[in-house]
Image (cartoon, helix red, strand yellow):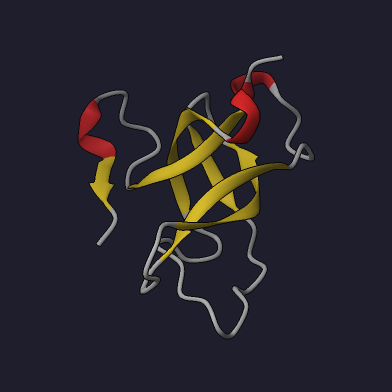
Length: 95
């Protein structure tokens, strides 16, 4: 089943980068599909000792990457600004 046709109750893990760390650190965050490449992060707050590159509740664009052991993981790479626009202008890089 593609993300675009998934039920609105389907939650998956999207990996969000934790900023201000000496090495790359990623936190799996529950998210629901909006479209094939856009997911809305859960509203659940980040742990108090972490600062994420995207806020809880943000709509993010994901990229599929290879994780440990060759498994595919979904990584949040940009904030989705306009979910109705079918062009690349709806992206804004994480700041």
